[in-house]
Image (cartoon, rainbow, N blue to C red; front, side, top):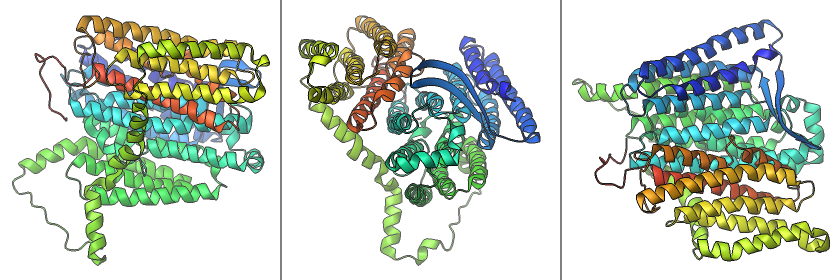
Length: 622
């Protein structure tokens, strides 16, 4: 049984590679390949689960590949299988097969037909990496794949304003969840002193022993898990992104935001349940969050005029109840509820276009409102207030903007004095001085050495905040994000054991991606006589090759698992001490904001309505 486990990750990966090789005009071949891969995955899953249940149905753990190993640190790919994986595997395979068959006809002759199937196979790869992950590092690889494929599918109609804008907005909220995962991984290294596997987390004696000695660490890690799960599953206060994600095609809405992706937060909490099951403060917090989400989602769904928004908020409400079930330790009930909600929402979203058509054309359709509802017994002020708040979607969208993105933009606007000239005149010399201090740190007072990591990480954070708010120069944004990684590497280098070899691993990916991206920007600027960032430009239509190269460079610079930068980021967090909370916060914020700056840069330059007037201008929304 153990030797067959990697097959469930390799099959979607091969399917994704095959979909890339098929020409875009071969629609039948492309869809047949996708259906064949997912069918084979489902058939293999049914056989595997059958024989697994015939046996002892024990947990299976496979340490697959060791990517990097030093004294006290090991980065490895680990695969894990239990009943939670089995349920998610079967539900995912059935729904993905159903939606790929549906999409082959629904998207017939669509301009982005090949791109859609490429992204669906990419998503399915990330989904399988997550559900088979045996440790946090492996899960984070799938986590990043899911975030990117979500962005690409929401922005599928990339010649329209709102799909692109909402794709950037959803990706921005996803990055908040990435902060939680990064910080949970960081403190887990210090709690366990190893790359802990989920199999070991099921050892109650081991977990209780570590948490008794470091209870504060345990609470912080559990809250970070909850933050990541709440973001991914659109729980309060992050619920507003899910209806905005419905700008993508109906099949992607069904598989992502009705069925699979939106339930990944539930999977994370079930998988880590043995870690926080005795932390009753965290369990109460989950129940409280689930109750608020269920109430807000239920009330908001009832007043929505869009059928997709109704389904989205209904799904959010049910997922809130699933979180409560997980917190109460009702794992089997939560898994049944997940399967039921996933199938129901997929069906509702897939038939939603037909429902709209039927209601328009059906001459005898007559809606009769219910004679009485539960709210009739409530005081009128409360009833009317809830109705108005539900119409406004409880102001969750504006709350996120006012209390998170607006302060970030305002903070970044304080550094408008930064330009390419000032960066090279001031920051480069200071960086050289920092490198000299690192080389001769034995001659520097200890009190100064202790302060330098935080100072250098703050400089990196200033650079990416400026990059995030830059509205004029695309190349300045790119240079600031590029230099941020060097400041992070320098900041952590003052901690012992962060060797020159590890610096090279981290920065080699940064240098390659940085040069590739700068060359792409320079090439585009020469062709188009400059690049603006004050609006969407839509250059992907006339320069698809440059757009693809620049996207790859953005992913490499953002630490996506295609370059050594991803491994380097994990190395960096493993060397930040457990008492260096501010350093960890600055580094994680820098990495998150640079991802936001990069995806915003890519969207502004290559997506959206084209700036040239001879291109047809699409409607604002889908």
